[in-house]
Image 1 (cartoon, helix red, strand yellow):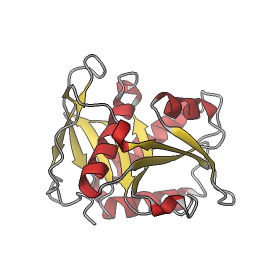
Image 2 (cartoon, helix red, strand yellow):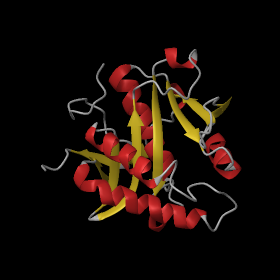
Image 3 (cartoon, rainbow, N blue to C red):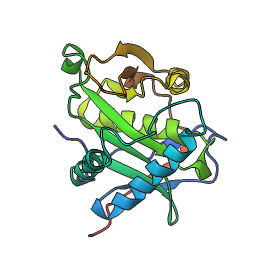
Image 4 (cartoon, rainbow, N blue to C red):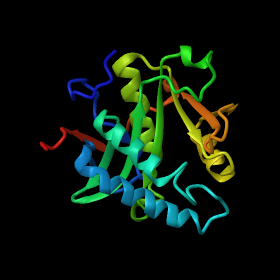
Amino acid sequence: MSDGRSGKCQVPPLRARCGSVGDLPLALHIATLRDNDVIIDLIDAAADWLRTKNTDQWAQPWPSEEDRDHRIRQDLIAGKTWIAWEGGTPAATITADPAKNPIWPAEARCDLAVYVCRLVVSRAFSGRGLGAALLDWAGLRAQQSYGAGWIRVDVWTTNTALHAYYKRLGFESCGFSGASGYPSAALFQKDTSRIRPPGQVLFRVQPAADD
């Protein structure tokens, strides 16, 4: 199965609907271990903002800071994490994984899908549709790379505002995971064939920087 990590997969640059994001394209790089602090800074800033909202999402790293940081490092090593940059400023990040996510029901894991997590947009870039565009990019990339029919995400269980966000983007609720104690158990998916066609260029995929 090819997941495009080598950079050889010919996925065209994603284009945005007119007026959705602003002066772009952004450079989209696969992240490496040298970007570890960038990812954590984006997450920590988002966690600070979430504390001003009516949600307990990311109030504390789950189940511990050490475990969270280990997951981030492992995804960086595996080449699953991407960062969108405007010049030298990180605008957003997304992690996309072709591997079957065990928190989903066994029957659902028979489908080809991409499982996304850790979608974070810098507050400096909020309100531009960047998160939605990254989801579309990940879905199209997976569809073209290995025939994924679904883009899937597990959403913080108690963050109903975030549930509504995904529904507005065309995701359908698939209920809740039965994984014991898992705080992000609300399951959502979107058929990749429903991703809207491109408009103006939004991302330019760049090769990973040499370490």
